[in-house]
Figure (cartoon, rainbow, N blue to C red):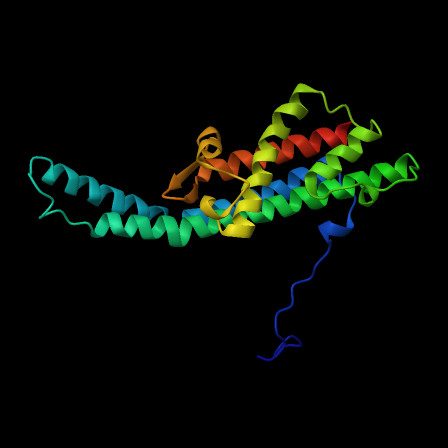
Amino acid sequence: MATKFSGRSFKPIVYQNHLTLPVTEGSVKYRISVLKSVFQQVEMTQQEHRDSMIKFDKKEQEFNKNQDTDEYYDYSFNDELLDLEFNFYRVNRIASVLSMYAYLETTLNRICQQKQQKFDLPISVSDLFGNGIIRSRNYLDKFKLVDLSNDVCNGAWSNLINLNKLRNTLAHSEGDIELSRHLDNQKINKIIGLSLFGSTIMISNDYVVNTLDEIEKFLVYLCQN
């Protein structure tokens, strides 16, 4: 039976645009929860397949452990795992890193703008030299808008600086450290959740989730102070 909606294409109704709302503790927690939820849902779509490949490859290792050569080793399961890591998980994790950094940088700028208006400051964050999250932090520090010496703030900030370097390496060299001046082998080894496959940076699931938590911790602290 025909209705008044027949023939109409679906158009979602947007009730709120998070980019037009003030940055608050609640808005930060909500946005981080969205980024985390989307990331984890995409990761989970291949979890069953990945677990199966790991199980089959372990059986191959057990079956061939006493062999003098790998002549009878079926590498197809291991190859499938590598394909998943490079062509699925890595792509999803890179996309998540770039998205979370974009949110961090944009939100820091907006917090600076909000504090400028609140305290009627003559200088905006865009007037300062530099760019990105470091310029925003310098703005907050220059006008003593937040106590950045706090342990919570300092602990999160060191992780966000690493995120900044990772983002730049991914954006400018797709994560190849031989083509980047931001990260090298020694620095990668010090960042929990990152590793190297040759000269290519590999990102773990835990790195993405933990870094989202660090972003939330830092931004919530700025909103509360």
